[in-house]
Structures are given as C-alpha cells and as structure tokens.
Image (cartoon, rainbow, N blue to C red; front, side, top):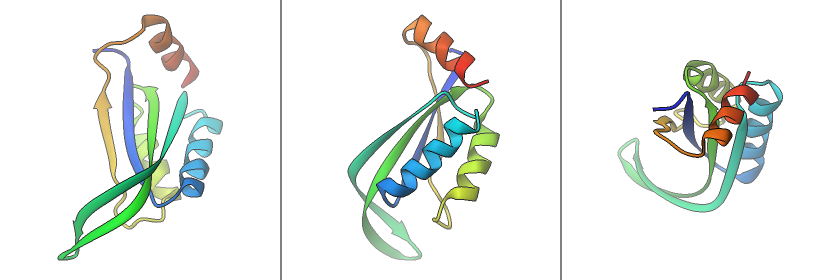
Length: 105
C-alpha cells in the first residue's frame, strides 16, 4: 500500500465535474483530478432501471482524506446520493506518489 488513494466520483455533466474538481484542488484537499466524459451509466434507482450520460472524476489524494473529500463532494454535488468510492493505490511510480502526497497538503 501507499500513502495515496484514488476516489471515484460520478457527475451528471462536465460542468459539474469541473466545478467539483476545481474546488477540491484549489482548496488543497487533493493533488489532482482527472475528468473523463462520455460515460453511460445503467443503474437501479427507486425501483426503476435508469440510464444516464455521466462524467467521472478520478480524484488523487493523500490517504486519510476520504472523509474531508467526501464531505466536500457531497456539499457541491447535485445528486441526492452521489457515487463516492475510495480505492487504495497499492503501487505506482514512487516519485509521482510522493508528489501526490505532498501536493495534497
């Protein structure tokens, strides 16, 4: 394991993704955010199968920031129940991970 995490968040559109991502980086909560567009989601919500175009935020942050990042994402997110998942980073480029951990503080 490393001292870094990846937080996966879906958003309804690129504008929302940019707004959330920029806030997280500018506020110093995270080191980097990637925005992936053009994703199609199928999911069950309130008893019905839904289909939607969404964007994904790949949020890179120091380990231990999940609560702070999740709270901030929820405050900025338009969904009633946003997808916020923490994925441990088990390895990678040591210099990049060192930068990621330092930049997030």
